[in-house]
Amino acid sequence: MSIIAARKESTPTAHVADEPHAEASAGDSAGTAPVATRGQVDITNVRKSFGATEVLKGVSLSVPPGGVAVIVGPSGSGKSTLLRTINHLEKVDGGYITIDGELVGYEVRGNKLHELREKDILKQRTNIGMVFQSFNLFPHLTALENVIEAPIVAQKRSKAEARKRGLELLDRVGLKDRADAYPRQLSGGQQQRVAIARALALDPKILLFDEPTSALDPELVNEVLDVIRELAKSGTTLIVVTHEMGFARDVADTVVFMDQGQIVESGTPQDIFANPREERTRSFFSKVIEPAFNI
Amino acid sequence: MSAIAPPATADTAPPTPDYSEYKLVPARHPWRWVGTVLVAAGVAAIAWSLVTNPRWEWGVVAEWFTAQSVVNGLIETLKLTAISGVLGFVLGFILALMRLSASPLLVSVSWTFSWIFRSTPLLVQLLLWYNLGYLYEKISLGIPFTDVRFFEAQTTTLISQFAAAVLGLTLNQAAYSAEIIRGGILSVDQGQLEAASALGIPAWKRSTRIVLPQAMRAILPNAFNEIIGLVKGTSIVYVLAYSELFYTVQVIYNRTQQVLPLLLVATLWYVVITSVLSVFQYYIERHFSKGALRTLPLTPLQRARKFFTTHVAATPTKDAR
Image 1 (tube, rainbow over the protein chains, first blue to last red):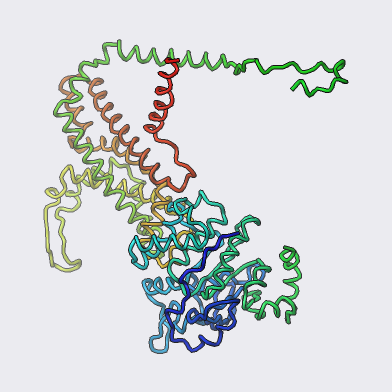
Image 2 (tube, chains in turn red, blue; image 1 turned 30 degrees about the horizontal axis):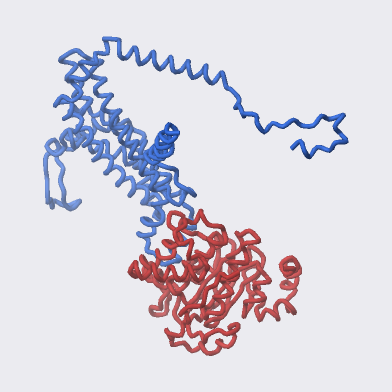
């Protein structure tokens, strides 16, 4: 499939974050990745409860700039909740998250972490793109309008500039000719590709994918995964929650296995898939891997 | 095709005859025609009686339909509808947002407002506002619990018939439209708000650019119901002796004793207003349905144009042959 047009200028090296961890990681990112210098994510001891159920029981995870972390695990294990705490869509009850050393959703005042005002949180979110399981495209806007909405409204870019960039992004996900279509006129796979273009429009350091292919018909899954694969090489940090084990094995630098609100183990795909140390990991993969691998 | 039939079976099953020259005749529906004729006869009978029965007094209707006093009344009706419609929906929008907010106080105040105004008759509300002077002699603006007053006036001079009518209609309208708007907002998927906040779009823009345009599809049919109801609902302010359309024709027929023709004058004007509003409704709903339907249906105008270009344009060429 010739979905991906030539990779554009999107190498993030232009904005250098003054980041101590940066060089620790760059070598990990797959293939011919440009050296990424921004998008270091550090999750430290994050806890979260919904009512009496504790869904995150002290989770810590580091993803280096340009890294690709794929989170897998049974449903209800807290993967999606963890992902949603990274852009403060979900408030944490304990612990903290930093992106390039900057706290997400909070600021230090004295010896307390005060939650930021809405305005500042929204500003932080423009650094973090998110792609949802159910796409959540705005149905009353065309594909292009969906992509340029946030750059115009949240970043106050000019309409002409946003349109130009929006068309480039739609081209990058192979949908330039569908720019004026409304989401309902597109297939599920096309909608998700528009959603990815929309997330890229803010030039984020980090992209979060919440089960991006779970709502798709099987034959449409690959067109979306191909786009994500291409992004993985571009130097943007990706954190992906998915059930696509084949994809995880191909693309991830780090596979994280979560169960019951905890990270059971994490490591390279080879480590996790071939010789998992924990019994829980082994039993989970024994249930899911076979159907996923006979591609 | 008959040519394909194997010759061996020719004795038992005769070859299928060739029907290719036969004409296709659609099934007939005689009862549909009977029904159509009956209904047409009924409609014709009603129309005939409307035209020929002199007691409808169409001459009188025509005479008063555009009389200056009636037109003045009509303008008052339109004014009341427009002002209380707009104010009612603005207040309703605020009440709906309050009701959906996270503050228990805002929620309960909004709920109580709707509860009170939906459970008291509009007639009572209007009379209450008009007689507010009986309950509170003066209305003043100042700092509560002190003697500081910036402004003070007699209630009776402040609340005219017009003010009482607008107050009553607006507050009543707000209570109903709050529920309609709230229902529309609730009908928009939660994921839309989530996606918008994940994109860093500020709260106000999230409401106005993402949620409301989608909510409008659910809001509009009910909102137009309300506005059309309000057009005729304004007739209730006749109890305040406010000279809108209905009160005006009442005054006239009390003088001339031509009760039915004058009620007909008012009715016809209400029909005209409702028809105009219905046309607006069609086009506004169509505007907000973009993206919700895969392809928008043609407007009546476009359909008519298509009909004329395909049929009327085609006829002369047929005749020419």
